[in-house]
Image (cartoon, rainbow, N blue to C red):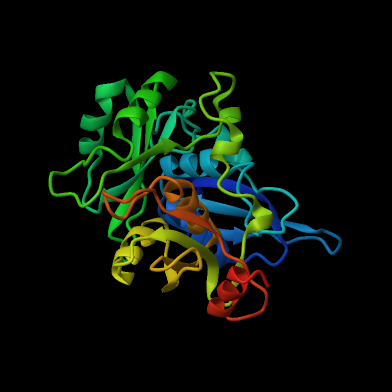
Length: 324
């Protein structure tokens, strides 16, 4: 993945320019992040000057739709390092902007995708036709895209684009955490806005930036086990398998640990460690204050960034309970 676009020529790929990357970024870092939006043909890290503090890269997608999704979600928002001074830049490479207009899957940027929804907790075998049937009830669907199906995940996610904002609002109101897309589905789907207000270019303040931003980057915690989250408000009888089933939907997990909570007798919490900060960010945004492991639970779970003080994960959480 470090060279050109493999067996495909540049004209057959959709090429993105990625800017404001840290100097120590690796091809593996970029592969983990950008593969979420579709099959990556190749990644090429550009050389940097001796005095440069940032680095750039080229990412080649096999489909233009994947490239558009990466731009709309990551550009000007996502930080690949918690201490990065600014978010990364994700844009069409200059030679792609004037690309072939007669190829629907070619590199030419598509029309605005301002009214895009993120749909989670979908079955692995979901089809775009099924999504269209469900979401077209609420307005004109202009595009659907199912994200890459990772083998270790039970559920998948997708993007659904509407022609207008009100259709998206209606879909969220009716479907989010209420609708099961299959009769035998274990849990309802999640439906949220995927694009921040400022990227909807003055078409209405349908969601504030504070609501959309996944989490303040300065609060992120990375340990030797991965990006660490604390999950509170779990039922006493919850199993590691149940927690893994829910949280692995948003990214690969390195470790999961159930433990007694300091919030009260019989309370249970979990430590969840993700391979990437992006997966942890998404889990916080879509689960915290929303998801219940039991229908009769009095309140949804709380998902937040963990803390690290050089101790083991269990020791750090005990110390936090004790105020040390």
